[in-house]
Length: 479
Image (cartoon, rainbow, N blue to C red; front, top):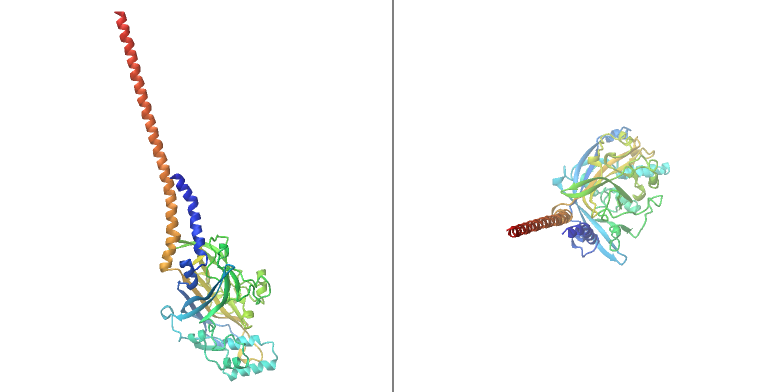
């Protein structure tokens, strides 16, 4: 039993690791893991927060913007992979479609709530065209007035999210097709609903489990062309849903995000536990959105402004749009001086992924990003008034989800209960074997002692008889 327990101590973890490898490979034969990868049964939600402008007229006069956060407005996100095609080189291609459904019971209000934010069509276009001839800028300003487009928008949440009718949008799509990202209504998330994230080709891990989920190409590309350096244009890591198994504290979580137009990488922060399941928490390093001055490898993402801002204009039709953490968390503190009403903190505004290190499966996810518009006064475009140069927060959103219900139960059984049973079994067998050996030794010692005692007694009796016999013989002779 000791031998069996010792063997189990070494072989048991290997058996578990082998099962993890078999179940992590992207293969329709792996029913549970394949279904999780294909349809993502875990409920995902997108919570949206608007920065409602309190002093639009004062901003036009050059004063500091004052904002009030409104939200969350919560949407259930449904993801489903389609056009799944397996290839001979151990890769699989797919498109993932996403749909959003408003959840009024989880929201602070309705999509009919009214919010005021900067008008991207006007203030964004003004910055884009500031180097055009002055006369042309005057014509652009006149066009804005013709279509009654001002510097700020006061619309319902639903209109700002999914699109609203605009005469200017119709005009631009008719006479300048391709200038705007959407050919229909103009909205901040108009492109997202009922859309897909592009054609991903990822490794199945069939021949090398270290490559499972890693991106081979996106839309047929193995590198991007948005940025200025080969390093920044690399497509690294996974598609951001699962990672290879057997992560360590030294491991990072690289992934490619089509929405951010770049690869990103999270780093280990601390261990943790979710209902008995061990996890590692990974977070965004401060260098993620650092500018090229503070972090040289990010020079390819420039032209840069303060650290904490990612300039995505190169992949967003050259509009002056920047991505950051919510409320400029982990950004240059000077950004907070330009806008009143921001209060960054890690608990509310830091992004993280809690992942089970053995399998590479996320247990709890919260990705939080903020959309900002760079705006300033542009001579000739009177809609800009005397606006001071500022990176203006518009909205921030959180995409979150966690494993729960039957999936969590299955995970807990396979990843906590069974390994624990195997662990205690191996120790039990070793203990039982040692106990058996000890008992056998004690029994053997007792038998040996008893046998020795019997031999000694027998010897004494025999000796006594010999002595007595000699004594009797002596007496007879004496007589």
